[in-house]
Image 1 (tube, rainbow, N blue to C red):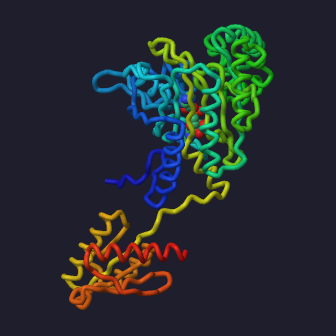
Image 2 (cartoon, helix red, strand yellow):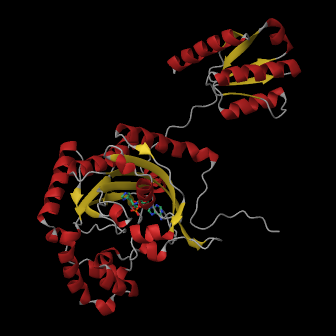
Length: 430
Ligand code: HAM
């Protein structure tokens, strides 16, 4: 039987040597979420297909072309989540989270699945960090959310990140805009792709988001939504900009941003990096005041964003930003002979209980090979135990870089105290 050694197209393995890079981002997200009062939510990887059809929208590329949908043995249609907003909104409703004091603020790390053509920065399984906020229509909340994303990228040390914002209005002003779009695109009806001809009838705004190059060209001449905003939406947008200015978050207004998902209302935004090629949007989001109602709840304004972790990492790499490597092994305790080996194991365990990273031989290597391994681990300190050390109750603690040695007691409490002192002393020197 052939060995199965190839992962499915558009997926990536995270190898042990790289996991610290993800942990760096995750730690930063956790800290930022806490600073903004967001709590974690975890929802299933799969949901009922209808959730995404209704939530994300039946005329979007995501729903029409990209979903991983299958029928279960029980006959249900299930879809791997293509994004995190719909699942979080479903959980919000199912568990009556609106009964808690508003606003409700949640964040998530989610693997997402979209059957797209893989290329740099575009995967079929990818990962998002997202923040969602429910229960406020206030423009200060839009600015706060955008500021949270901006702070994250700033703390990561990212440069040359552009923030582009737009308002796509509410159902009230959108009716007029739809009319204008339908009129405009109807002139080109015969030139449009088949999907867009259908979208022209069902949801003309989706034509602005078509990835077919010819349609994209036609879309460039379309009326812009900002010219059709009602007074309320215009005031809301002006106010969001005012709060962003007050927060010192730089942005440009890009009236062509409409986003690829149907639930958005009013504010939409994207963060773009010019350092990672065609798939340059590292973060996208906006307000979605109609989604909760669309899914069967009472009206509940909401807003959020998600950032793609793979694209973020690509940007960090492209900009030469170094991610701090994990601390190396604190100490390797080598040993010769059975008694010494047991003592080494006991000391290592004492160190580990104290929260230190300590290793000893569990492979059966000779002493020379043990010390070679200690070098490979980059251990800060090492120590060798043999019959003499066990008999004396002391050993030589060696600082690996400088070669400096000092006597250390092998008595449990004494040992920890003296080792910690040596470690602090060396860190101080560094
Ligand atoms: P989205 O723009 O579809 O929005 O995706 C958000 C981010 O996920 C993108 O900016 C990108 O960084 C990353 N991403 C999307 N597709 C892929 C892919 N195929 N491969 C790699 N990365 C990808 C949403 O998903 C919304 N749920 C965001 C949101 C949250 N809006 C409100 N709340």
